[in-house]
Amino acid sequence: MNIIGPDNLLFGVDDVGACSRYLIDYGLDPVGVTETWGTFEGLDGTSVTIRGQDDTSLPPPLGITASYLVLDGLVLELMHYSAPAAAVSFQKRTMNEPGLTHLSISVDDIRATATKATEYGGEIIEESDVGLALFIRDPDGQLLELLPSAYRAGLPPKPKVRRT
Image (cartoon, rainbow, N blue to C red; front, side, top):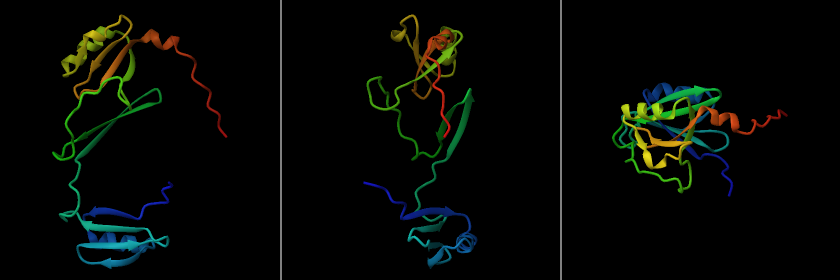
């Protein structure tokens, strides 16, 4: 199965008239336009539908806020959904489930980092303490494995990236 492309994209907009003019100016053909909604078609048959932001047929907004933490080329994206219907209840994950189970991070002082996490609502998983590593849960329940900074020195070298 191959996805060829989208058939229709739906957007809630502040000003249907201004958005309609914009889409027409960029070459989309209006196939149905009123003061409160419009559908515009491209040469390949795909379409864009716009509706006024207060249109009750639109899904509710997510109220999303994203923060990006960057360190040495790693970007960690943290997302918060403030809309009541947008967030689902937390479900504790275990290590043997498919998908992302935990993040491993190296720290200077495992115990001090774990203790600091509890000050922000995190939890230390004491039974995970094997001497080398310790698991904690952040305030949202994500598992984090705390490893000593020296752990990184024992990892194999990063592979060289070939640019073609």
